[in-house]
Length: 418
Image 1 (tube, rainbow, N blue to C red):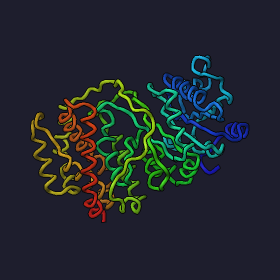
Image 2 (cartoon, helix red, strand yellow):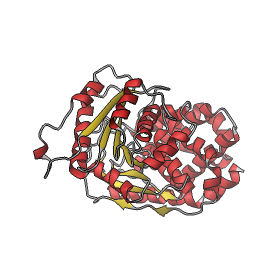
Image 3 (tube, rainbow, N blue to C red):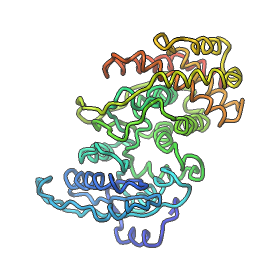
Image 4 (tube, helix red, strand yellow):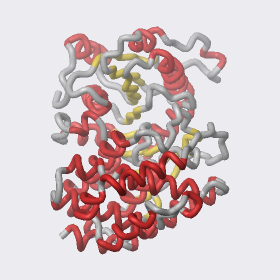
């Protein structure tokens, strides 16, 4: 096997199983409270939608101490008749194993890819272990396109307008502009991928890097698109997980995800430099309105963090940003809350300036990325103030407009990059 180090009993289990058609992986770390629901949804999805396929559920665990792996092994569908029209032909097979390597979601995924490769599966998916909104239909939606010629199935969710602000303001517009595919949730956390793509992932030399700790979601999406694998999206309804205040301390996540995205720009420069426009990708699943849990937002606290940044980080910003942007930020730092507004054009210039500075190694990458946090929080506060009365459709239009600005200014990025 060419990937992670698997324990002897897992090799023996793989030998017993031989080959399989479908594999669904669940990475976990101390998720005993929620993982039982996820396991039941996966098992029901196998039974309901793929009764004639040999299916394996793999729990790749990061050393849980709360009995997560025991819950996985003990969870079963007691009453098949309540969810099925007919009995399942193939039993659901399970593998629960601790993963090895750098602690993080990427290392958990590597074990899942490795087992998928060893079992020569045709179609795989990974789902988060803390999902409260997963249904058996998710398994059909993430897996079925893989039997119809697709290699990568990205999730499409309805989310609260203030959930996923890093995706909405940076990762989606940037990924779409760079690689030309409108994958709305490039870091969604739940994906489908072909056995062929799983083997391609295993061949990449990233498993001792930050990708193994974090950044695995954007790495998977970008690797699939940039290497011309066939990509689609599947509508999964609501993604309900523990909500996070967009103004809370997101500096670690921002550093991780943006760092991974900018690192991938280095890997795939030749792929993105020649792309001028973006296109929609096929979307599966019936789209419907969903109820979403509210998210509390403290704009005053966010604006105060931005103002603190203008006082403490201006020397760094002056190295990265043009003088007119610096002047705008100084002025914005003195603006009262009700008039606080950062236009799309300014935000795009900021992100492209940071990308070029990262590429040219103007300052240490960690200092560079961490100095982005107050700017991101200021932009998010502006977005919240500007969309307070907006419904989901209006917000999506505003995100679309931001993407158009990113695409229009791409020649500036290419010029500054060189």
